Image 1 (cartoon, one colour):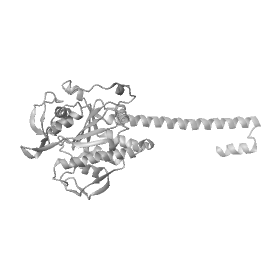
Image 2 (tube, helix red, strand yellow):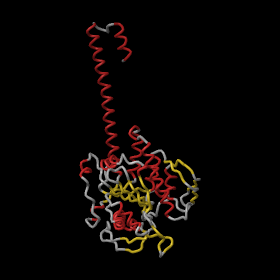
Image 3 (cartoon, rainbow, N blue to C red):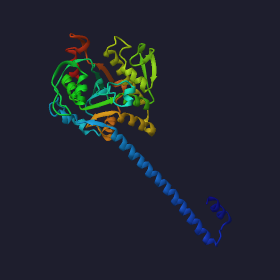
Image 4 (cartoon, helix red, strand yellow):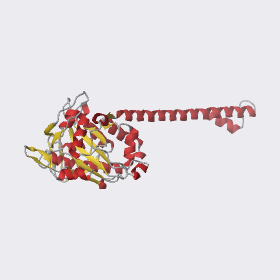
Length: 359
């Protein structure tokens, strides 16, 4: 068609008179324009359909638990938001989030990464993230999973309640009553209302690190842990998802082999991930943005206040001014338990003073 149009234009006419040639050329151009327009329209429709599917997929990735509905009003009160916070276009009030890393072995990917047994899961990692008003500073407090606590009575999804238990390991709260009991126990320990709950499992953490292109971490000592299958010399390392997860789980290859040494490594990883996120311009790489979003939402369980993309996006937007330099990582002060040298208990009054400073 293009060759014939060129020939007609070169000779100034066509098979009939001049007006007929012009009419045919105009008709061909009109058909060509319509064809190109149709192709563009199809592309727009397909792009919109792809975007709609991606949104639907990411939104339906997220699992949620109705923490507020399960616990009711028997909880610490939320602080009254300031007038400046309510006037801000983005949420800017102080926020407390319980972040759990689950050692579930449900699913082949979690099993391959060394999670807990199939019948249940435990909170392998527990962090209370306190974000200051203005949301430019944060304090991350790790709670050792081996801490002996009083586990309060918790409602069960199947009906009924658990009994109060004294001197039990902290991570049994999640194992027995899931996220609801984990939140209830943390609020009982801290007397701080958890505004939100986030849980990510083993495979989700590894996928997130890989989607970001790995994470760079500096270790202060050699690590050789047969259980986490990690062998690292002291120094700076760029780790893929599997090795970053192994670092987060390492405890026997460092220090005294307790959970306390592992917490220090986990806190390093938190800051390293913040640095990696800050240095990655996801908005200029839609494919990478989707991979990160898919990895995050695919293994995420939240409370019902964060169980949609708009809610998670709004939270992320409100935290754009938060950098790793303004994140303080600490561990709840503990001492060896008098009843068991392999367990710890809160060190008082230091632990209570820490929690009071975050209310």
